[in-house]
Length: 194
Image (cartoon, rainbow, N blue to C red; front, top):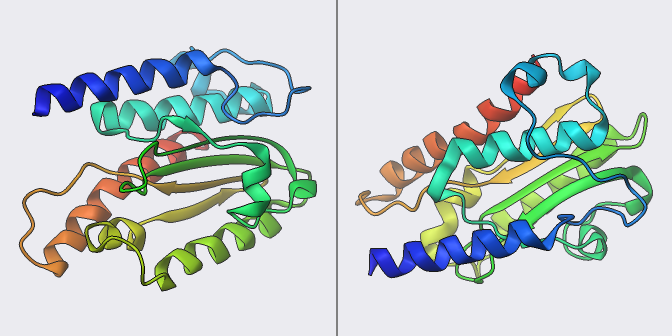
């Protein structure tokens, strides 16, 4: 069963990589996803597009096979689903799960100059809405509670990621497991902005 799941996940990952733009504006410039670690350390020299791509790559690498999001989030969904004002967004990369049983999401936004705090509030409102939603699968609650909105000036990130917890026997240990998993994304992004 694990082998079949791994094959399906690999196929979804390949499909998502070949689809291209990950929700970017059609008139935004394309960027290479192959930034090296040495060029990431001088992140002040990167364009917005390159910074978002570097953050996306770093987070994906932090999780490896446990990175579930593989479906691009469209620009319209930013306002309709996430409550983000498109007028505040310069560029973004977003991915969500293909199956509704999963909640894993990665959103990286370069807000327009001076709009980072506004986008942060909007994503925190979305996160609060998820926490209040009683229709969530109980198995996803720890991951939702461990989700994070982080901001570096006008770069804002929403991450709800992590390996599936097959070992925890109670809510407290499930939450601790999810927090440790969620920290991987927060740390990977933080390393790019040091």
